[in-house]
Amino acid sequence: MSDVDRAKEFYAQVGFSVDHDHVVSEDIRFVQLTPPGSACSIAIGKGVTDAQPGSVKGLQVVVTDIEAAHKVLTERGIEDSEIADMPWGSFVFFADPDGNAWAVQQIQPRSHA
Image (cartoon, rainbow, N blue to C red):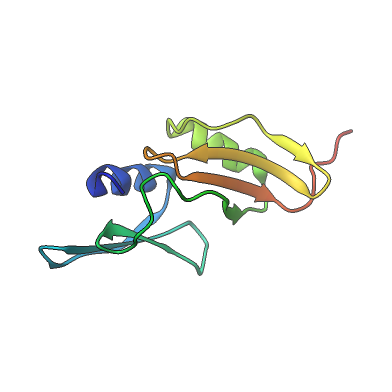
């Protein structure tokens, strides 16, 4: 992350829980964030990874209601895509301030009456 505090604020705005924010040393700061309802989390910070800011693509979270997820992101001021229906699911896409790319997926496509 190019700016840990900005990234932490962004993910909290998305709705992730801030589980930990611990400064280990002058060179290491560990921030753990968990998406709502998930047993998996992400770690951001200083000295946590060798990855360049914005280089992570293909992160994905699965939800049961893509319309609700899209509405929450939009209402929270997150710039996200329209819902895209594909044979393998319905998706909304967004990126964090560094450009790390996320997909929010509802596994079954929405039914169209």
